[in-house]
Image (cartoon, rainbow, N blue to C red; front, side, top):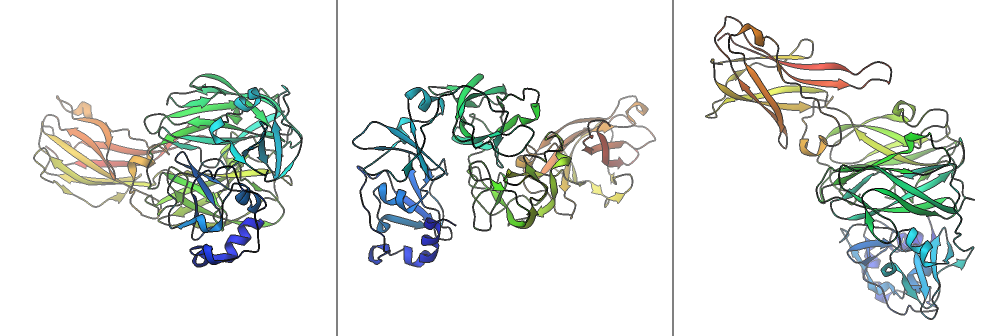
Length: 504
């Protein structure tokens, strides 16, 4: 924990509410030319944020806090942050001089030209004017054009809210290694490989939806800004350029999610609430570390969970001796979550020392399905049997008449018997397989039919039209869980739901 975090943790939320009467033993040597905006802190977390243009930006240190012109009496301690969290405060200039500096790793680096500034995706409106620089000045940001050996977009929460913007970190990696090449600085690019969701990327002067955009590495790290599309669940695929041109597994898919305050996914945090993704990766060592999987909203902030689910947890980048494209190589294990987080221990001993890693959390497919209701057009419910395990699950329905329209409603369940509670969200995160089919359709002169599945919030509905009279029941295959193949064997259907009607 840094000095800033220790200072705020020691104060406690009660003391922070009345900072005007507290002496911290710290004095400001200089004031900023203009205080940039209101500052906030969660009562339970040490991080302090400044709000600017509707986004919160974390202040990295006590020196930076004072050099921005703040006093502790101006700090708002809140139970919920008032805006989404963006990139940390990192661009500074002295009020009396034109030079702009990038703050990174406790050091300031002079950005020597507008070309370098724009190529990095920075905006002039995010430069903080100060009377005293908050850190020592190191080497200038270089303007070389070589490519890194490998490059990986580091994100454990690859989502951006509808129409909003998010900054993603790109690491330059050593050849055949998962270690960051901190000695690398230079200009490279990120190519938009596929963009069906109409997201856009900032190229230094404007937002584009195709082609390549420049990125500028400083000590092995660069950033790229992505803007979500106008509708949820659209995707864009990005590939950072590198000398390892054949390594297609480094393509990162980013998805637009609904801009809501309720859960849209999961991400991994430290026990202190620090997200392990992008500019805050975990680093491998021989000792075990404790982390927490938490349900999060579109901004990546922890919320009460709405999706009870089994999730697969993976470390990324994958192990050096196993291709990143094979998820079996870096799966840590399955976990079950409901409304609150789940802690887990993970040892990075299989990684090389100093390997950066983020954690990717992917939901599992529902394990079971059940017919919960069959109704006529007037809303009358037919009689259903309880499910019977038989090559999946089999149920029967009575009261079906010939040449009549019905609605079949399905409920999905997870391995522990928990019903799926947020189908509209989960269906975009994990493939759900609906293959409605009348297995004995040829036995009627006018065949029975099943319409395509439609999704509600918690149920799936399938239109069923019974055919002509025959002395056999209809056998309806309603749902199947597809098990993905291993790259050699094709995918297989391992779970099926059948509904058998009465004779009509």
